[in-house]
Image (cartoon, rainbow, N blue to C red):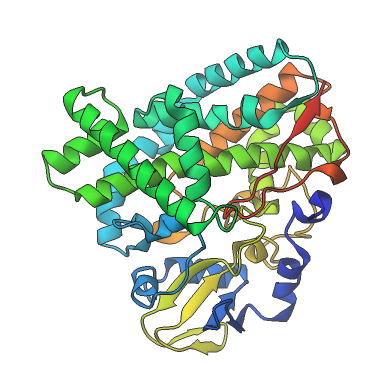
Length: 393
């Protein structure tokens, strides 16, 4: 079992990569020759320079991750501009900084309701099912127009779709088809009963304006639903564990809730979203590219390793130090960079701010109910999360 204290921060192998070279040749699990990029400046280049293409990875059949979600037709993640831009514009207005900030009172209301329910329970409790998961699920359901009451159904699909070995490939593929069927049925309902939701807006864009295909509509909707809660739910739990493991940082945030924005970014910088990722976000070169003095041949797989970039000492002073007052924490690569920068970055930040401040204010003695060494990660998933977050107060 992976020890949580040792690996909720970047694993040693990633910590050491910047000490070698920021661009190095590697062999992937399937025997492919590839290049791994670990320096902050170089990772930024790979994720923003059009010579490093997402569409080329599909053409070359380069493995993105074990999850079947990347194999679904109409996948926005496999597109380059201008096709990627066309789809992103359909949803971008919903996730602008101003609109997401306007949602903060509603996000706070959802958090307060969950905390009120927690207070009726007897500690210790597992924070995952009572707070970490339902908070972002409720928020993305309201944005998309997905019934919150269906959460157990689509959560089951999501777990299998995001599997990287936890479930069989056949199970994952069946769940992908089931989730697509669920979204298709919901889309039909939005046509018949418009409700002003993002899903209804996308349905209009498809059937009245012909701005995206039916496959693109279904996949985009699935991606928003899954990505809209999975990573944030895991980060709430892992972020709290990081704070519990640094009592002085925890006390500082309790005493000064205005530190929440920098605390959230330091959590995101310090904790990889995928402990077991092979190499990082994949791109493929469309021509020969020189990067950090290394010539990467055309049509080569290139992996941008975000965890290593987040520990680059040329980007962050004493990068292994967990410091919620760090002024440059927001420069992390956990949300990506360039055209594929995470659409929900602002939403995730606000959800995490509300989660940390609300829990610490409501439960002044909130603490882990077990030694940190007893915590365990979920296995076989492309997104890292704790199996449980037992807390007491």
